[in-house]
Image (cartoon, rainbow, N blue to C red):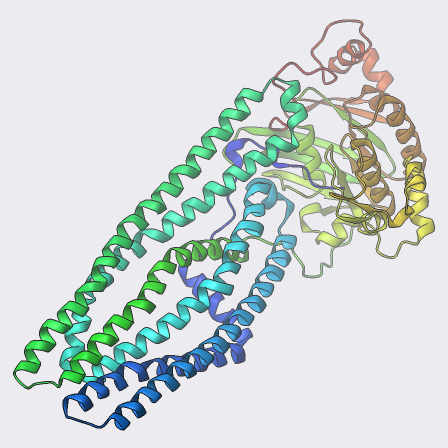
Length: 610
């Protein structure tokens, strides 16, 4: 009971999920800070105290120099030295606790980001995920959130502490002697210019790097999930070439960010020395003319030398900040994506009748896949849709399931447009079962309760029995058997039977898209018979790849080139001698016709409109 993959759409039709602009990122950051304002304020206060304690040492050292120069006593020097020690210990303790609060704030904020991401991802319409591809969404939910989390835990607190220390040190230099302070600040111009050059280019470079990672993840995921199809149709070399192209794109994106860092860091290293040297030269000249004391020159030079440590932390971490900023922009971008309608609707279908009227549909940037399709399915009718690959069968099923909306025409159930139904009401009317399926981590019971949270164990066993999944009674822990990686593994047929059992529990008006594709012929026929009994009285639309499914249906719709070209019962269509008759005879081996049962090499349901 899963949505189909984006392989049904042309590659050109894939639309990227939105990325938040800098203003949206700033608003989101402020919102997260306000949610834990107390911890953030405490972290700010303790960091300020730690920075202030760190200023004591250089100032007292300057006092020591002046005391010695003026012939002061050893006891006076010892008292000043003790003050330096007390300041260092106080700075250590305050900084340690401030860092603890910073890490705690980071972990709590990261938890909120993860929860918010999951909520937003689940609210995305299926069509949006279809167009964007699973790779982009997966990369945002894994590597991008991990990068953001590292910044919140480590980089963020380090940079914040360093920024507070830098501000206090600059303020101390200016207060100690304004003229020396201005001279020192002028010496930092090189760092400002190098940082400005880097920051103007870094965001776009890291966004491009994240996009390249998403594209590579999408190619690898599609290759892994479609390995059997790739092997069957000899597409191995093509997929390798696609993967190598995306890897080269990732390498190029990494080289671009590496180039930016290779310019920034040497420029910064050189710029560290300039203000200290300038301070000593200018301070020495001013001291020679009696404008400043020797202690002020020493303290100012020490402050500027001390300034290199927080600045070095900031500039060394600025690469991580840019990377995490781009990652957070991608994570926060889901806020701008369209969501499933959640407002209550007054529209209620009168019955389960499905009407497709004058429907045209094309994937973004591609040709028309459906061209003026008209079709009505009566409540309780079993309709089979057949046709060659690329005829538009899967696309039609996506429109019927509300995953996509037609460009022209309408698709309605009980007189209500399917697109106007809220998600919860739509899924009570229509469920799309694709050739793909998913087994969630958890127990067999957990996987079944997705479809009906209130179902009893007796109802779960009845649903499993209805689809021929008696093998569940042989599991070591029955319904409590853990499934997934590291636990009990299901084969393809068992996983699909589990998906079919969810359909039975959901009790909808149902659309079946080759629901028995992965079963062996004997199991498929058994499951089809079981479903026929369970779904009696419901409407069933089967995207038929086995013509036996069409033979058992009430009516058969034949699709060619995006149109319904034949519609009628199996017997009527065979007697008519048209396209369906050719497919039927070919399936029985009467005449060689390239049909749905045996598509020519290179074709398959992964093609657009298939």
